[in-house]
Length: 224
Ligand code: PRT
Ligand code: ZN
Image 1 (cartoon, rainbow, N blue to C red):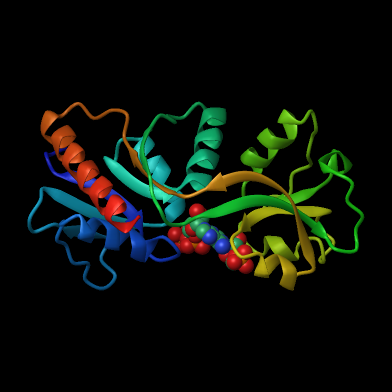
Image 2 (cartoon, rainbow, N blue to C red):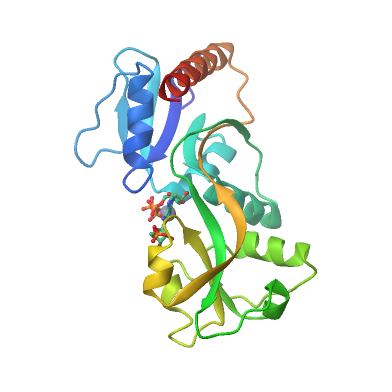
């Protein structure tokens, strides 16, 4: 199945989708996705674009199924920690931090609950979609945490009586405020980034990546 065409995975729809496409197009890579198709072949480069769920992007790169991917550092590191635990391939190279998708992963508590520092959450139940990043942070402080993994509706968990606190992505903070939660500790800062498979040896592909990277640098400098 392997050929010389470079495969790049981007988010199909969501917060990173439009800016990922925009960035690659501004770099001069011409491609068009027709409705609902997974793959688009570039007309002017030996590049195929793949659009998938953002959660699948780090694994596709780590397994060498695709050569490059654009994904949030939050999803990237959580996947890496999960895979390391399972002894699955977890290698990649982060070749560029991009200037979009900025957010932070924060611990937040109900506003009516007294908070005297992260120690007050020792062994608490904290709802999150990022259990490994949370555990790593708590352990780094010499603290433990009880699992409460939710893929969605994390911000309603305390009110529903499922958890004492949450650990979720924040950008403006409006969602926390709307749910009566107060941001307490930022545990991880994240931006979208470009990652590369650690297993590429094909010189042609490596040259193509160099070319894309220098164009991305140009685009980012022009936008500064
Ligand atoms: O369907 P798919 O699985 O691909 O998408 P998804 O729903 O898992 O992800 P998506 O599109 O919501 O987010 C993709 C990536 O965007 C995340 O992994 C982050 O890297 C980044 N990002 C940047 C954010 C936010 N900002 C953000 N604000 N991801 C999520 N949020 C959430 C936040 O948790 C809150 O619930 O958006 C809501 C609004 O945030 P406030 O603080 O502005 O209210
Ligand atoms: Zn996702």
